[in-house]
Length: 208
Image (tube, rainbow, N blue to C red; front, side):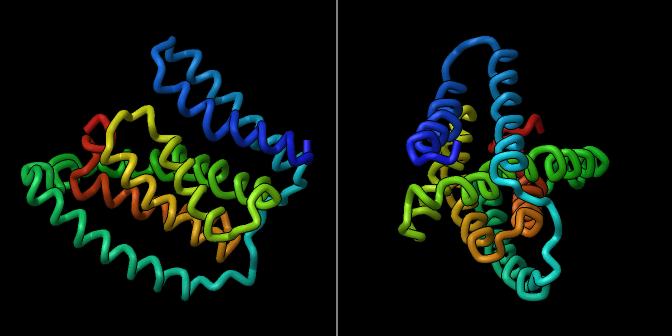
């Protein structure tokens, strides 16, 4: 399972073939089953093949991390608030103001049950398995953003593709520097929750 050819086929299957297949019309339960099988496979490989230990690195530079996240978040806040203001002003902070409990529920569910699994697959697994396939670090990070956007093709929304590509770049850079699933998950949860908060939820496929 550690051969270059095997990893190449694995990469194509998990990060190209599977997400592209989700754009095709076939029963939703089959798609869900394939997604679950893929995730279980990823966890199995990380634990049994890569012998990855899930533990918090005591040398993490938390202060620097928070400074960088806050700077990036400030820029995201300005850009996205302006975007919603000019494109759909009625959506601006709508859920937060009209139904704060629903907002809190979505933020919690998204952060715990969506963000962490995504980061486990697209950052931890990807960086652990495929460095051997691509020696150019910048191209490797760029490709990560591409496949992350590809993983959101099923939304069939150009805005989602653009945002997930840009987000993928930010998350890939963070993971490449920190090698921490925890830190990149926190960053992902913060930016994603903000997009929902500012009023871009319905634009990005949320039910509200």
